Amino acid sequence: MKAFVIEGKDNSYFTVIDEPQLEDEYSVKVQVESVGICGTDIHIFEGNHGASKGQKRIPGHEFAGVVTEVGSAVKRLKVGDRVVHEPIGYCGKCYACRHGQGNVCQHLKVTGCNMSGGMEEFFVAPEKQWHRIPDWVTWNEAALIEPCTIGAQVCARAGVLPGDTMLIHGAGPIGILLACTAMQLGATVMISEVSEGRLELARAIGVPYVIDAKTQDTKAEVMRITEGEGANIVCDCAGIRAIAEDAINELSVAGRFVPVAATPFTFDAYEGMHKQVNIISSRLQMNQFVPVIARFKLYKDTIDQMITDVFDFADTKKAFEYACSRNPKTGKIVLRFNKVTD
Picture 1 (tube, rainbow, N blue to C red):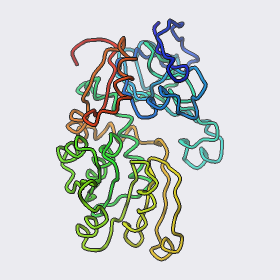
Picture 2 (picture 1 turned 30 degrees about the vertical axis):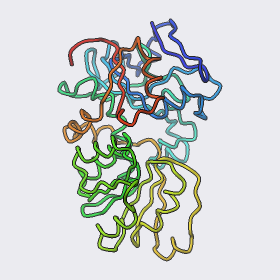
Picture 3 (picture 1 turned 120 degrees about the vertical axis):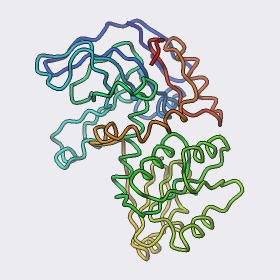
Picture 4 (picture 1 turned 90 degrees about the horizontal axis):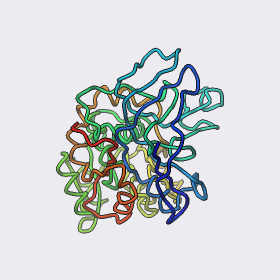
């Protein structure tokens, strides 16, 4: 079968590898239909991803397809089911796993990051890493289910409640899907961005307060909107140190800060104590696929607006080169394996 391989910066190519076989009675084999290109994939392509640096890697962790074979012990799935892949594999035994946090397992395996991913024609994984999707979900949309779980995880970690105010810095794909999730949960969302294309998308999906950080003072706008209280939750999806360090001044008392796009920053511990704020980390997702799929109709319109470019699998290298140009009008890029009508 064909697979797309990245082997360091400026060295990517298609190759032919053996089609994978079921590994045990719990395995499920899937013919891949769609894959989303995410920021992590771009970092791998550019040679800047720590877990893949210097490694030969088949990328792709946002993907969906059709079940073609199942092991004898598989109970939930059958041949012909449409499924999406959950990209985390965890041991179930370490401290994190014993406390329900397999997403930070001591022996964590992440599809497409520190192991082969979905940019190949067939993929085999344990049944627990596949989730059935409804027929009305298009293949393009299915490729974005995984990013939706990232936003859902941030909201779960931050303990979003109806009536909370949330400030999101950065209206890229994760920022937009985080906003969508927070609004579903009843939060009032503010989003700050400098790219006009992303500002337009935030407005189009119904974010009530969209702040153009080029022309507006974000903190002043937050204080105006919250009547001086500050945001109950601030999420940095931009990965800019100055933004992370300003969060303490934008937060309300008892607020929560989530550095989603991790970057080193310093923190005013006195001010943090004074306000009794929480700094909450969030990695990948845990137990978010089922609830996200159950309410996926609430994401559908947003996702359809986010997908700006669809490439054939044969044009994967071209798609990556286009993604690396970082056109401010580019939303989400999806690769399709079989040119058929959704």
